[in-house]
Image (cartoon, rainbow, N blue to C red; front, top):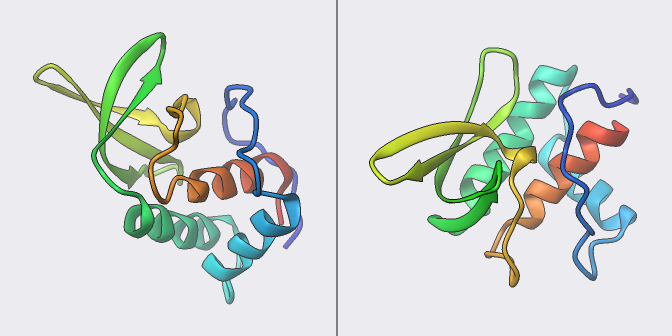
Length: 121
């Protein structure tokens, strides 16, 4: 299914070395082999993000450092990071995170999701 990305604005980040467009599209295909429609594709990508990322990790969101403890999807099919700042937990769209360098294991799945949102598949 080819569509134009319509979900939110992602911060301008440079793709990590080795994550070519072909690699990102292969990852999307791996996560969504039999999916029909955007909701199913978000679910497939969410499962890979949930399973593959090494939590917790630090990231920056809205100019502050947060600890990402996991992910969820919203009723609008947006993947959000569960971010802790002190004692509060906040849901922040995962595409609004600025990832640290070096990147935590598995965060290439966030890049695959970012590519899918921006370019479709």
